[in-house]
Image (spheres, rainbow, N blue to C red):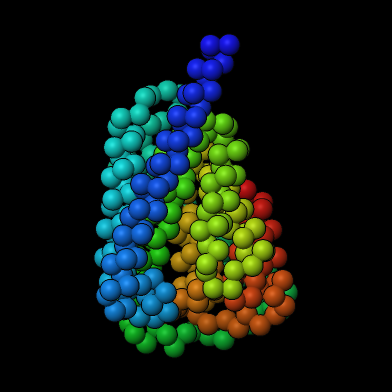
Length: 280
């Protein structure tokens, strides 16, 4: 009986630690970022995503990411060893390789989704986007902002929180809980729908699987960034409710909502759900 009680206490401690790490790594820095951003003209994410100068949002997002990364680094230095690697963030060739591989995987997945829409006739090619007139600096600035935002979400939802909740229960339960929380995080996004929530949940589960496979965040961060940048900046599709500008190409996503995801985008589309479901 005492052993069972001690095991329950340990599980509860790990669960509490997991939730606390999600708060400290993601929600607290993001709350501080947004409070400051609303006081600076053009520094909010919606403004930058819509074609405004990305500098303010990038600076604040970078600061929030740095705070989250600091907590992750301190966690992995202090946490006990074991069968799984302790370092979720590393500065070595393997981590860089996984980042690059993830970028490719995310980009290919996004391209397959758009290709499915084109084949179905739900999307139509319009050509190079006039939004590129702002020059390469604005395009690269937005891409970097997407990378910062995507990386921060991975630290928060697939980092120490996932590891501690796995110790509290099991990996499938921890991954599903955090994927559901990740979907709820997007509930306030424009044009959110039930299919959109399902797509985000599947994406969260797939990304958790990448972390489980490699033991660190490199592959998941790369895949998340590759998906967002390719989908929104290359193919001009809405990303979780946001149409990004500047972008490389313009396509008319004018087919049935079940095929295009409507204003929410590919995560709510039938091709997107299929690809994300297979990945999960």
